[in-house]
Image 1 (cartoon, rainbow, N blue to C red):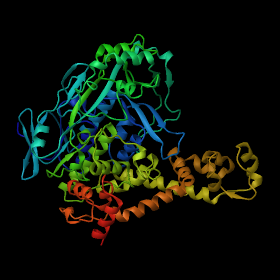
Image 2: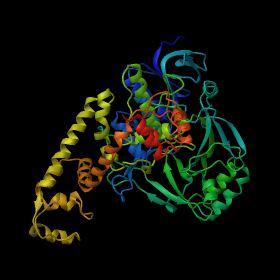
Image 3: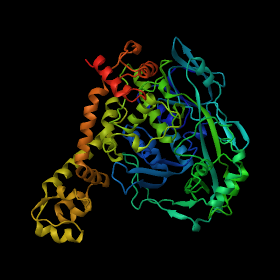
Image 4: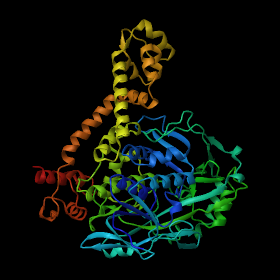
Length: 621
């Protein structure tokens, strides 16, 4: 069989690969997506959920840009919750529990519906590289597939090794083969290759769990959704549950420490700091008498339950005995054991902002291959790599998001500027402009940018325009409507709010923390009538923009001020050892990482404020 040349070959069909292939194909490129198993496209290898703190913002940004993760999540969801409601709106983060099998099926249907996108089940074992540029791939079946660009999204499969107690074997996931050969070739091409580790917990047979002894965690009473398109919110939901380990659980787990691949040193790669295994938690936090576990269903009709917080690579008999010591799990059976997996990754300082490698032209990396963890972090990298590969082949400028534009911009800037020494996970604390980068305004921030490059369609742009029109109209009404003391004081007293001595506009009243927009509609029939036809998202956006106006304005001012330095370019190939006024560490780091701008240089560890002053004096003309 002879393959015709493709514009882009995407290797791996996880969350990064699927978004990369879909984006590049929708921008007009002829794309081939190669995966070891077509039946496991976008498989949720760990918890069957999308979103969460900061991760939910990323999914909404992917959707606003024209990606598919939000749509597929809405079509596959079995529960929806908005996290951090007790905090300010900058912290609100959507999360959806998904039907694991339905999620994979929905993604496959999306990919098969895109005209320029072909699928092929095979394993890529080598790249074709000629003159410093990639020219295609070679597969396990012996096929040589020409391509003008290649995007690697191999996840945990590169030289993957699985560990359970004293046992270990090669694998990308339990029951699936690793990807061998690529890492060795890339190392020969001069790439730095290192190891990381991650893990997953047991899957429990729900028929053996006593849910009456667990704490129920239902979804939101009025569930929202991820996509800004016309997907439907959930009409019914499945509950999750909370459980807790105990001192007996911890004692049982400790009996397996002498056989733990982490504690005996057989695993060298670092694991995710913020998602440690249960044995790591009880070792690091030995003073705690319990740890909370989240018991999550894996589907509408499946009896498989995911025990979030109980990730382990201890021997199977220890895992099972410890599980049965938890209240509600005394009779538990398991479908699949917990395990750890160690795999190759490529420190992402070897990439530019477009996620193209610096050593090989037209070769892109996205997802866990860059040292990240999480479906959402992988998906957004895949989207950006697919977009940028397509744009480069079409002779167009790269599409790069700044830290003040998107969480995606924060993530990519962190990766290519600072690198990683442990699996990178997004948090709201990583973003300097959290009030600007809320989950509710992702479409207004990003859809116009995506529409300009052809990724977001006209219908999405029309929706954004309509939403902005509604927000502006309602905001004006709130600002122009006032109430008198005689009309409002009795009502204010009932809401334990200070009384008025003169007329006051509704937007001023809305600044009071104890009052919200729906409550104020009780004081103004005209406002209530205007709000009746508007979505909850529009109402919330108006309330947020008024309540946090001064904070939003301040962040915008700071972002604008820093942008003056952010985009000052640094010359390619410049030898920073020619500037003796820079510290030695700064000169060494700048020559190694090759920042494109002074803004990027400022975020490299070891570059001091004094060094930045030298760079500004030298290059800011």
